[in-house]
Image (cartoon, rainbow, N blue to C red; front, side):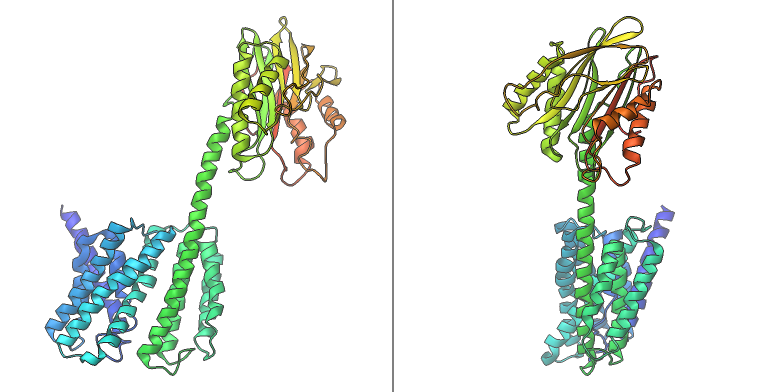
Length: 541
């Protein structure tokens, strides 16, 4: 309990000290009225403290405001009124943001930036301006004729504190340690130096060159998100205030309060613009991450989590999706037992990518598994899938190479295959001979009565079968398209190797040597008659 009280007291004193120091800086820029300035950073300090740490730290705001205004030479009741207004302003801003906006101080959503501007920057600052100006009027510090101009200066000064200082502090606390943005530390230093250099040029010349500040602010937002946007905006604001206060820059020649208001209005508007851009970027990044996670989970659900252990058969499989992770591929494969001593093995390709391809892939895998449980002939299984596509997914098509593997003695197997418009499996004999198995057939979903036939071959010890999708052959099309004889030559060179070694050799020869990124999804699946191997996980190598 004593530790908690000590921490609370330290926070209160820290807020009061920070508020007091910032207030003295702001009051040094007061001209028309000693207690009213166009630059008032304490408002941002108070709002950030109460948003991040909670309402119970309001005594720190009250103490800092009281101490800062005691030395302005106004009556004590006016000081108390001003301090009350400053405290209520911070409490009102924090309450409005938390209660009505569901505010997040990270400012990673556009709605949070808008809430900061509308509820804190515009609405809550009216509280302090109204109470403060009324207190000055009651104390005889201003006359009724100056009420409007003094209120405007107070309100805009407090608004600038909320928009620039509060946003900087909230982002500085909530984004630590600043590792999420793509920009690197050296680039950050360069960006801040450029922002400072351009600001010096802009605010030391009478010509209006303020528009040239937007490229550095855009750079800060694009590469460093909220930390970059708020830091660059604060640097621009500090330089603008310094030179504008010395009657330099595009607003030189106006009264001190007027030129400071113009400078702060500009840097506030440009800073919020940069912050909105950063929020748009982070919102898009979050959406992309969410889509990528969903797509990844969906893609994993469309592929087997592992290949089964088939006695006497080695299995190796690899799936490579094309493009970004949030693009669900249309290629698929599966290996499962259909009856004692019999397994279904197939690879397929649903036309396209995304939701439609994923839906067709799911339909194909489910239908093939269901049909395989009651129909041994591959051509009949594919015909059943064709009927389901025509019924449930008209105008969509896919290709499938479906095989039925049966054990045939202690060192052999029988493979029956049927192709629905899919590249034919390649059979690699132990002596290096390679042959295609079956006939191409008709693409599934294209017509109600497809041409589908069965072909059977006997596999002996050392024989292997390579099933693949056309992405393997067209990975780098149109610059390079692999013909079946070239693939067969690569496969023939793998005679005597295990299933995993054959798969690796095929991909290295046809993919790794191609360079760049393949243009289509790729599935390669290898079966080899030989000693049983540990089941290989599905997916990449």
